[in-house]
Amino acid sequence: MKYRKFGNSGIDVSVVGLGTWPLGGDFFGETDEAKGIETIQRAIDIGVNLIDTAPAYGQNHEAETAVGKALKGRREKAVISTKLGVHRIYGEYVRCLSPSVVQVELENSLKRLATDYIDIYFVHWPDNNFGIEGALELLAKFKKDGKIRAGAVSNFSVGQMETAIKIGGISGIQPSASLLDRSNFENGVIPFAREKNLGVMTYGSLGGGILTGAFEKPPVVTDKELRSFFYDFFTEPKWDKCKTVIGTLREVAGARGVTVAEVAINWVLAQPGVTTALIGTTKPANLERNAKAADWELSADELAKIDDSYKKNLG
Image (cartoon, rainbow, N blue to C red):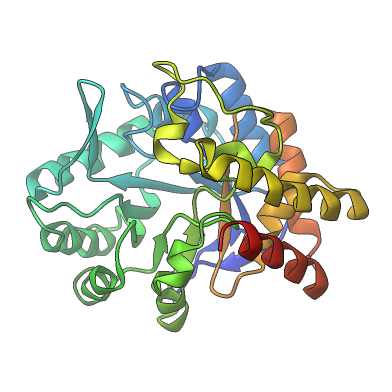
């Protein structure tokens, strides 16, 4: 496994990190907590030290709770990143950056994670009601108090990131990014982070699973399978276009003797400014296969072939 510094934090993170949103059990299909815990523990065993979670992953904080259970006796080997500011209320995702709420959120996350500090603490989304300044002030305070090692933000614009640097002294960002979703490269978010020496932890690196190449048809929407509401790759007009691009990935993967997912992850890691790419899985075997993306690099010709396919179909 390879490691990179997460911006100016001094924290070494594996270039492939484990995202635990699927462990919530209500967005990417039902999951088995025991198998998810096994996956987290296997991640640590093979050198994937970055475990990303959030209170909003699951109606009752299932993902954070599972991470706490999985890392019992292994805490010192893990870099835990979790988030504040998004709550589950009657099944809805509700943003709230009220400082009084944020203070309670931190203590609750520490309890669920069975730890006395969080390595990287993200403001999950901006909040138009309470604004971002109060939460950013608390990030700086949490770091000063030793409750967190580094503050960071997710889903922020460049202007909001500038405020976060000034008030919160942040060390990184977590934007969506994949070879199918290039918005945060094009809108300047990731280039700005690179310029300011902020760590970049991408989510959606496998496009909600479409870039594994495992879907022949879009997943059927149920009360526990809702990825198509967040990722528009699973609906037309993008579905067929994305399948064509994935065909190109299959060609690259076949010539190299690797998986389609490895190629997709490798593309993200090859982009300037990216520190680490999150992959979400609750199966140890999938984790092990995907983590192999850290062991090799796409050539310039392979990157050009992938980008040409993207431009022809989705650009």
